[in-house]
Length: 102
Image 1: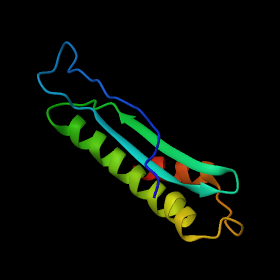
Image 2: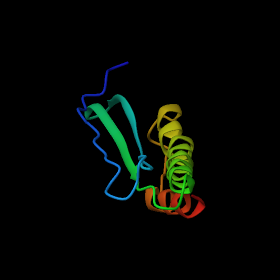
Image 3: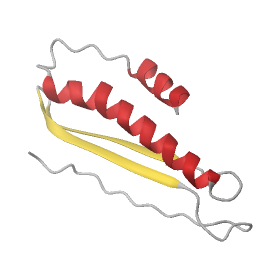
């Protein structure tokens, strides 16, 4: 398997009123081949942890986990397992449902 050719970084700060960082982030990378050559895909997400106490941190992580699971199960996994000719993904609907669930 090819190593995805992405370079990315993450920087975050607590802000002026918090002592801990409540943000969450995720990067899901997929690399493979297609009729067009090497295909690298990535999904990069950030959830701003807003809320009192640790609730903001919990909410941010739930959002990232929920959307990551949906993207993996309904987009990336079908791409990996299919012959690519017979796959019909409605990415907008999948993302909308994942965000609403989160």
